[in-house]
Every structure is written in C-alpha cells, then in structure tokens.
Image (cartoon, helix red, strand yellow):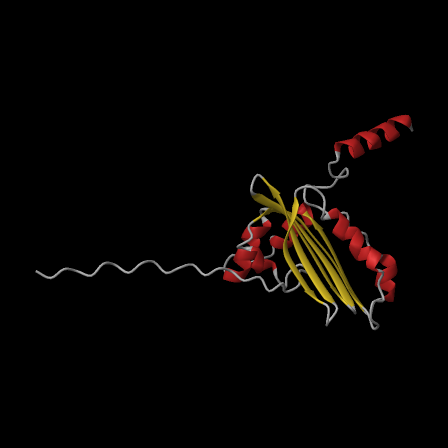
Length: 192
C-alpha cells in the first residue's frame, strides 16, 4: 500500500501523463450517465493497436484510403466522445470544462476559438507541440443540444489531418488544406 501511494505521489510530482497515457492523450471520461440521457452518442477509443488493425483494412489503391492509411502509421490513438440531446443543455457544463482545464496545461496551445453567443455554440481547437511537432490535438465543440470531444494523439501532420474527417468517429471538422502553387511556367524561348 505504501509503495502504491509513493508511486502515485511520484507520478503527480512529475506532472507527466498518467500511467498508460501517451503524451497528448487527454483523460476523457466514458460519460456513462450522459450516454444514457443522450438521444445519440458516439464513443471511440482506438489505441495504437486498434488503430493499426483498423487501418490494415484500408486499401492503398484508393487514394483517399491510402492517405488515411499513411496518416495512421504516425498516430498513437484517436478518442472521440459525442452526445446529442433532445433538450438544450442537458449536459453539465462542468463535463466540458473538465476537458478544457486539461487543455490549459503547459504545452497545449489554442489555435482556433469560434464562439457564437446568438446560437450558443463554442468550438475550440488545441494543439500540443513538442519540438515544433504536433503531438496531440484536442477539439471541444459544444452546442445547446450537442457536445463533442476529439483527441488525436501521435505525430500529427496537420496538412494530412483532413483525411481523417468522417472516419474512425472523427466528425467533419471543415479542415481546409492549403493548395500547393502550380510549378512556375518555363521562361519564354528567345528568338534569334
């Protein structure tokens, strides 16, 4: 018992992720009570093994599936919780704020904040940077009758992230991919 308490104290003192958690992985509850109250719910928990298994079924012949398969090799996990209710704010705001507090920890930076007081919507996107590499992505989207939390863990290529939209429970996030400029035209030939 004393050894267990000492190990817990060391883990808390180090400030790192909990045992079994990866850098960039949020501690997202199962929200079992909310799932019972929700008219619709989605809970996705894919660690690296399950993600690898799921990606092994993707075809490299289909360009869209090939992009997802390539991105999967660099990810360590995808975690999604999404709930829809028949009444406004049937979920406690404290549930959303508990995740938001985790995203205010050192290393996490908010890169998008979109809020509409008129519609009661709030979307925040956070990224965890480590040596200028995105190692975690956290998204909190709340509306009067719905809230969604997405946590993507691993070496994240933000330019390829759009390929995950609509797959593995990741909602359509409206990620725009910058278009690459066409190669410059060759210089005109000089006539003699």
